[in-house]
Length: 390
Image 1 (cartoon, rainbow, N blue to C red):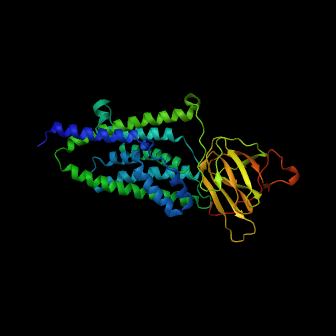
Image 2: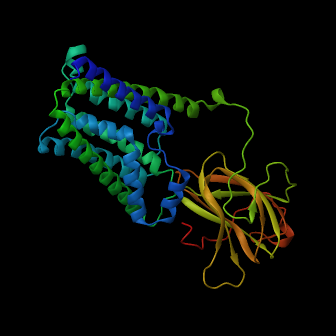
Image 3: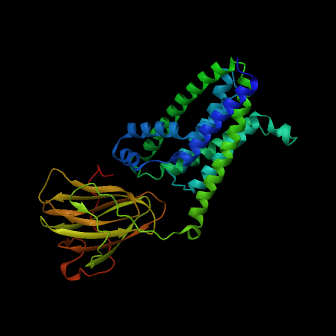
């Protein structure tokens, strides 16, 4: 039979190994979303928002670590429901309010505070305020609600990276939040089952110390990593490295990227996307015509869809060549049909974003007369026409 010391050592090594694995992996920045997830939530309905919310919570181990700390020493259903509900209300309020009102905070700074919240709840679990600080701990219910509000800002900063529907914004946010809660309940149920089984063993006391000290360490390391990320975003000039820019990925064989040759541009066009708004800009092109293009913002990432509509079509058909979320794109298009070709951009930020578009090729601009096509700055006059893009 293993001694208490051996059990302690094994549990500690297992906890430390899992912690280091998590922190050294790509998941160390908590609840980031891949481009595939972003595009799926753009193209899907409210059920997709719900699904992404659920999987987002299940992969957001900083939030789950905080919930784990909350329920660690709770045994009655009433207490578990009370404290978990307080946390849920806290993060739901700020998630909905901040996203609906486009309140954006630096997500590295928010995640740094979330890391400290994990350390805090574990420190409270070991009665650290009395043991090490000789003071009474703050009211735990008030602290859980307050920290829940901060966690909600963290969820909101990630959600606002996505192009949300203006017409169904509140419903999209609520669907995402419902998914978050479903993911939280699923994880909570598993935690409670494991904790119930572990409490029956003789090693629970040792495990509880290792687990909570491990949470304190985890929260501290997350704080340091997120603050390092914050320094990158707050003072980017200190971290600039000379690198060659990579060409963006295309989603159609008709679109190719030019990484080696810089075209001589025929037109340089300035397009302003309003705050919380969207804009389309189009050219008219014959079949087999070629368009070289490059556009960029001031660094703000926008959702874009580069697409075309055949001339004379009355069904609403259009073909997307490439789409994604980025602050720039360049490439070349050889058309497979006659008609309009161009971009749809969506801006979910609270400020207008200006796009500098440079083009050359066989095209006809639709926003100016033929005699004034060399105008440097112009605003598009073409309205958004495709609901499925949004």
